Length: 364
Ligand code: CP3
Image (cartoon, rainbow, N blue to C red; front, side, top):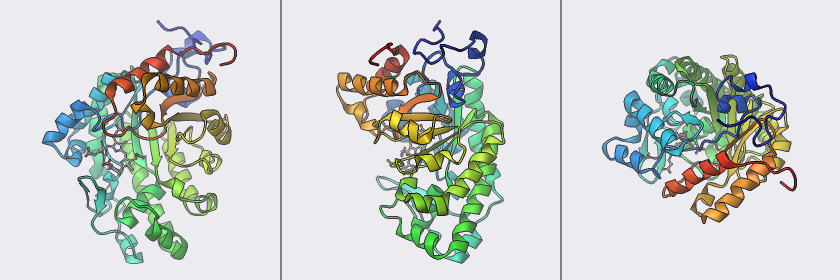
């Protein structure tokens, strides 16, 4: 059995409290843990043979909509890697369909929304009363939660209002977010209505997931780094904050994640999220200082480091763990998702490195 405080995180903990809750949920709440928990963004995906085998027979959306398959993909990835949390297999775009916006994934292109939201009437037409159509995600979460019991944390997720609005308005991924920012700057009424509608649907969607057994909700604001600090504050922050707080009111911690967010971290933390996800572009301790030590952080290995020789991977993993310094409230992860062709054995090696790490007393 692992001892309390082996990496320095729990030296003042009382033994009993360390037994309550999974180490993943404890770390989200900045409670002392026996060792740093670890999981990976996009841990179930094309880099994994088992997932590719399932994908031969089903489209991505079919997998998401069949709880037996979605739960199996979720469980297989978490068990194969030996991680501390399982993120439900789903996709950010799923809530668009019940809002009245059909989409599809085109090979090599990512998601395509056929009728993007561009006008005030397009915004008015969006429905907010059908989040229950997403119950298939809840059924999958129930199966994953039943499988893991209290061995692993189960993560539900959704997109943040800004990031989902950008997909709806652009019709897919984007480089410059011109249509999104045009609505944001030029038609404040439509922009606010759109974000309000998203908060309504996403709150209902998260409630379904929490009731089904999600221990934590991660809110992906993947493309928020396209905003300046002022624009984030003026046009996106308030909707994110409302969603974060609505989910916390359901009784679970929230992880709020974005990419290229170095200039936004303090403001993102002001949403009140329990955990802020860090990308890999700045050292973990620098990011954590920006976020503030009153919040936990998650991150932040560059996913492409997983293609490096094992010694390089190890030095970067240790650098991150030393930067965390054993402070309660660090969840080891990548700075963004695992990409296709990543060697699975390197992902497994990172889990071992995190598990075996001990913080030295001096010189880190
Ligand atoms: O293991 C997990 O992390 C859970 C599964 C998961 C998927 N999508 C499945 C998926 C999660 C958490 C997501 C979230 C998601 N989806 C995000 C936010 C995360 C991030 O990366 O910031 C975003 C932006 C999306 C939208 C999306 N879905 C895009 C842009 C793409 C295309 C990417 C590509 O490389 O083709 C997807 C497709 C997708 N979603 C895949 C997976 C495993 C890969 C495609 C496939 O299987 O065909």
